[in-house]
Image (cartoon, rainbow, N blue to C red):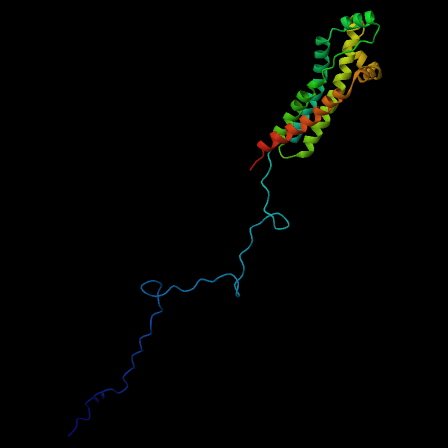
Length: 222
């Protein structure tokens, strides 16, 4: 006879919770598993941003070092200074009194030896500061050439003024002749000028431009 107060025995496999199935672990990189492919540009992936550069796709040029203002100032000071130096050198080299005495004896006009062959040296000196302080700026090279040309022409004119002052034993200064009788001084040296003289004059701007280019190329920033 069964006991009415006896608790019922659990039936085997009744209401037994099912065990969850083991989920497979995702493959890890390494340990025999292949690496997942990396996304490549294109095929739906965005392109990497381009390196910033100048308009038109060209890279930004390297900044140039230099001081154009200082270069131009030094070239101008040299050009003005060489006018005076050229004139006084001519006055020191040429013995104008002897030339006048010889011309009077022979009944000819005195011929003054001109130092225009110094034009190349003057031009090179004027081109130096431009090539040094303004590398890679051709406009300043050509401007230095113009300054060199003016320096030689005015230097010859001032040299004539120096000789004229010496002929009067300094009664009138060279600067006075140069400023007050500029036209006469200009005519005085151009009258004696010949083909070779003008060739030497042309060497002055050529030397200035060449010196600027040569020195500017060697000092150009990379």
